Length: 100
Image (cartoon, rainbow, N blue to C red; front, side, top):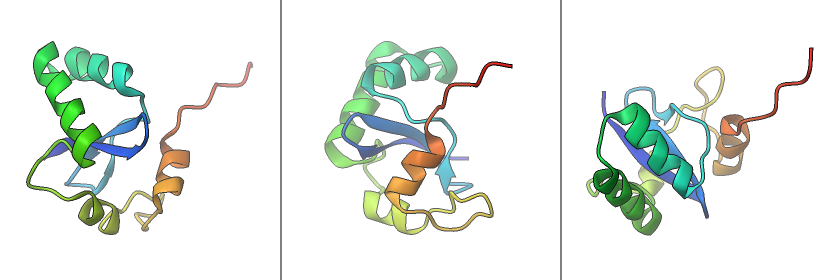
């Protein structure tokens, strides 16, 4: 399974899976994404920084992939349907858990 970082909007990054064609993380800002990659991805800080820098510049951290292709082929909806970038951001945003 291939995973890479996608910049959905300014300061909004997700880990994307090309197996499920959808985000496999919630939306994070730059610093949180770098920390997430180091802690859960098992990579060093400099590698995580490079991946996020590339995604910030090019839209994706994988230089062989185009952002437009990723978005056009996404199956990020609940029933694996296509979602717009705005809908992906909404669906992938962390919401506070209401008190019990």
